[in-house]
Length: 63
Image 1 (tube, rainbow, N blue to C red):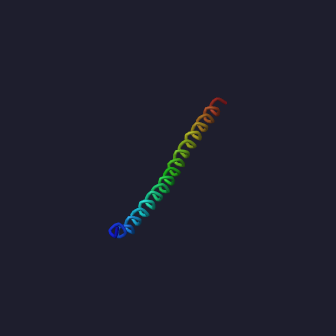
Image 2: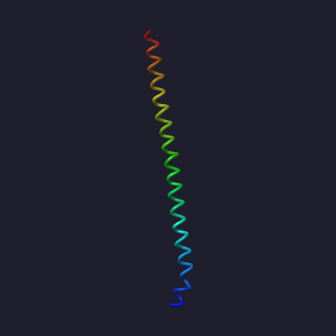
Image 3: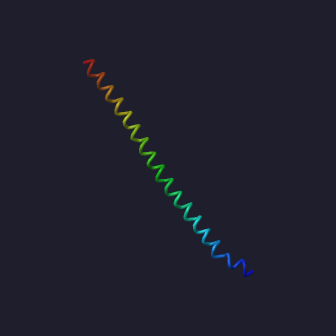
């Protein structure tokens, strides 16, 4: 029983480090997802604007 109580603080220390590690990973993962979503949003917006520009050029040629 004494050996068990000797290892108890180390066990809880490792457990706390694992919890902190998983929380940090989740936070960084969500930040990464937000960055990737904003980049794809920019690309989609740019694509739409290019299509509008091309359509306006066509309309100006036809006048």
